[in-house]
Image 1 (cartoon, helix red, strand yellow):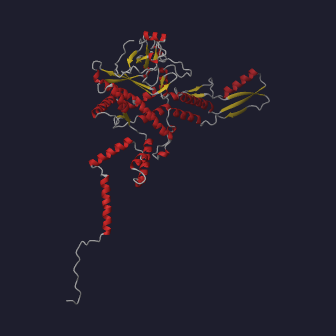
Image 2 (image 1 turned 90 degrees about the horizontal axis):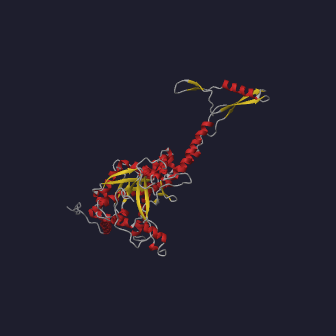
Image 3 (image 1 turned 120 degrees about the horizontal axis):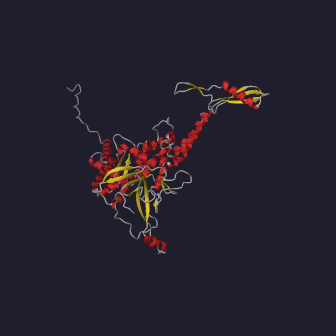
Length: 549
């Protein structure tokens, strides 16, 4: 195989030789793209949805242009990415990371540098929207080949329709012969397990539908093979297990959207054709022969037919008698013995204002995109009431957005890993531990979840206040904190440390001292009731009575 473009970061922690498995490793989203000969990425879809992933991406992008679908996408993106004039849409949280303060400071600085490379403060909405629609996101990590320790110099966006992730099975002649001879069939450890090589294929040309598969014919003749470490690859996490291809969250909305479009088109056609009232002219032709009867009917129709129309382009009045439209009146002959010439009116379509079917498919479209149906009505107001008044759909939507954020954060993890390894801040072994304890905090703007959390907290505090007189008699303090306030072990430890520190700093009084002062005051009050009153001033001398002088 030819040399791949880009760079690779070698992991010193190899799998021990005793660890064997017939299943090849896959650290991606579960999509399986294997190349053994010359053809890649082409499927035969029985349902006629798509033939290859390029067709799929093109379909997703055309769906995003439909108004109802675009409105639902905007609701999701606006909930996931909250724009603020002062704060960044996302920040890194190293609270659970067990590392030195120096390492944490470096990680925060490098993450800030990555956000600057992505221009995330300005383009966060666009980046998340592209990722959501396409179902995948590619960035080329550009470094200085002469000075790789300088880290990533640029992050270049790659169109998803021009990029493919490939896992190629490498087979040497010895392995092929051993598999054919089936050596050591009774010993599973002697099996020649497949060795895979992962890389990306970039086709810079304009890839039309179906041409992407042909670009993979004949190796790297029409595509540039890039190393796995030089490309950031973030997917939606939604995979078609039957075809092994990555899907977008818009995939479930393909059928509801097509149904909605067809219903709307049918409704328009029906209303245009049935809306106007039409007249039926029964013309008495007497005993005329068929040919003369037809000629007589035609003469009468042309005599009374008025087709003068106004041409808005030229400002002229034009006679269009020669054109026949679907909204024309009906002219029917009637033989002698009938009721003679008659004109009747054919009513227009009834119940033209009925759009229940349209609303049904609109709601179905929103349900397929996991967006609450209530957001479809633009006239519905937003009230900050109790959380019990909040619909379950909104809570479910909030959880869905949280999962989307979690999946999208894998892009930051991959770029941050490359940056820290290139700068020799951490080793690959250290990163495997650090990655599990690094979190990303997005700005939150979902008031429903906030209301629910506030009411839960208020209810727990009220319960704790009611139980407080019983602490030490029927309940322990630890029981109240764990079962009434619902504090975890980590929260209890954290709060105890913070309380001790605030008491030490003099921000809050010591509860023991406060209790002692209260007891002293109570005891002092009791003694004052039992002791006789002490006069504060000496009694004045008695005034001599009259007659004693």
